[in-house]
Length: 118
Image (cartoon, rainbow, N blue to C red; front, top):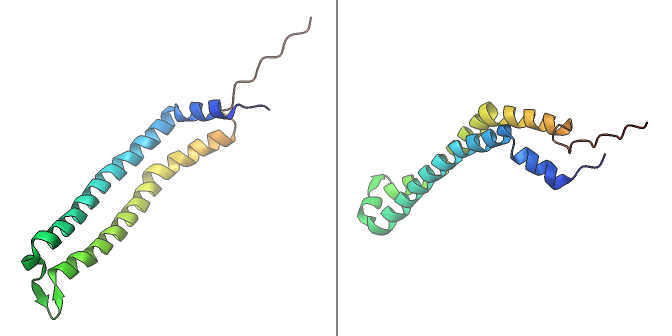
């Protein structure tokens, strides 16, 4: 059983299932990354240029900047939770099926036909 590993990995990477898996991952990751970085950039920009607004006291010693900062943590955990749900529904079933097919040898090099002895 001699398989050429690079060829095997190329066949896996070129399979429609793997391409679909990558597409599904990107469909979640790219928009979520843009949304989070935009939210974070808003926090940083407001902290730098809207100091009066960020310093506005909401109650007690709690100001807008502190709430925005704490919401960064909330957002991080929310995105992680959303990703776990998305992966469970969309990514994991396809990845498990693809892994089963890989383990079964479906992507191994085609066996060389044996010469027929006359």
